[in-house]
Amino acid sequence: MLYYDKNVVGTRIKDARRRRGMTQGSLAECLDYATERQLQRIENGETSCSVDKLMEIAQILEVSTDYILFGLSECRGYE
Image (cartoon, rainbow, N blue to C red; front, side):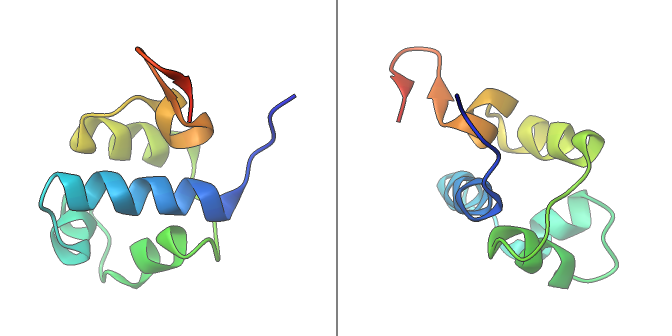
C-alpha cells in the first residue's frame, strides 16, 4: 500500500519545476500565491496542499498527479 509522504511529494514538485526551467517565484505566481514562501514550504515537505492546488501544479508542470503523489509515470511504473 502506498502512503502520502509530504517530503517526497515536495521533492517531485521541485524536480518537475526545475525540469520545466521554472523558478519558485514563477510557479508561485502561476498558483496565485502572494509570495513564494507557501511553495517553498510545500517543496520542503513542511506542509501539503489541497487536491485542487495539486491538480493545478500538475497541469502547470505538465506531469500527472500520479507522478507527484506516487512517482508513477505512464511508461515506467513506480520510481
